[in-house]
Figure (cartoon, helix red, strand yellow):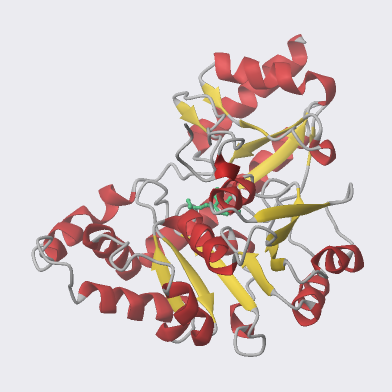
Length: 354
Ligand SMILES: Cc1ncc(COP(=O)(O)O)c(C=O)c1O
C-alpha cells in the first residue's frame, strides 16, 4: 500500500552530494560565523523576545529593517526559512493542476527540480549555450503554454556564476504571460538587482537569501520581493508562524550590524579575484568569470580525479558536471585566505603530478 501522492513514488530522495570535509568549499557558505560577531547584542535582544508566545514586536521591526535594506516598502516583502523555503512556497502557490509546470534554464540551481517536484509542479528546461547565454525566443516559446505557471531565471546563475543578459531578462518579463521569478541569492556579490522594477512589472517575483552574503546558511533566512498583491497571494500558502522568533531576532541584530557582513563580502570579492588569477595560471585549468562567491572551473578529463584528490586532502568542492554544458566542471566556494591557499596549493600539486 502506498499512502502518498502518486507522483512522489518515482521521485528520488533529496540528497546533498558534497563530501563532508574539514575545509568546506562546496556549498557556497561563508567561513564567517555571525554568532561570534553579534552574540552579546543578540542575547540582550532575546531578553525582550518571549518564545512562549507566538507574537512579538520583533517581527515588525525585522520587516522594517529588511525593507530599508532592500529599498522597497515593507508590504512588498515576505520572509521565511531560506530562499529554498521561498521557492517551495512560490511553486506551491502557482501549481494549478497536474499539468502545471515551470520553466528554467539549465544548468541552474539544482533544487528547482527538487522543490517543484515536491509540490507536483512539472519543470521544463532550456539549455544554456556554451557561453552560458540563452535565446529569449526559445525560452519564451517554452513558456508559451497555458500550463506554464512560472518562468525562472537565476541571476547570477548557479552553477555557471554569470549574470544573464539584462535586456533578455527584461524582454522575458515583458513578454511572459506568467510570473517570472528572478533568483537573486547571490545579489550582494553581483550588485545587480531587479527590485526597482516590481511596480513596473506585476508579474515579477524576486527571491534573496541570507545564507551567502550574510554568512547565515545554518540560520535559514530568505525573503521574497514582489508587488504587494503578489505577496498577499503567496502568504496564503504559508503556515502562519513559519518563522521562529529566535531567527528573527538574530537576523534583526545582524541587520543592525550589516556593515560588518557587507564589508566581509568585499573581502570575498577580492579573494575571488585572487583565486581566479592563481587558478587560471595553472596549466590545464580553465576558470569561468563569476559574479558570485564561487568559481566554476575545469581540469578537462582530470576533473573527477582532481575532485577526489581534494576530498582525500580534506577539501570539499562541488561536482557540477552532470549537465553537458558543464561536462568535467567543478565549483569551488571562495573562502578565507587560509582555505583558498590550501585549495590552490592542492590543485597545483595535483596538476603537476598527474
Ligand atoms: C541559486 C540559489 N537559490 C537558492 C538557494 C537556497 O538558499 P537558502 O540557503 O537561502 O535556502 C541557493 C543555495 O545555494 C542557491 O544557490
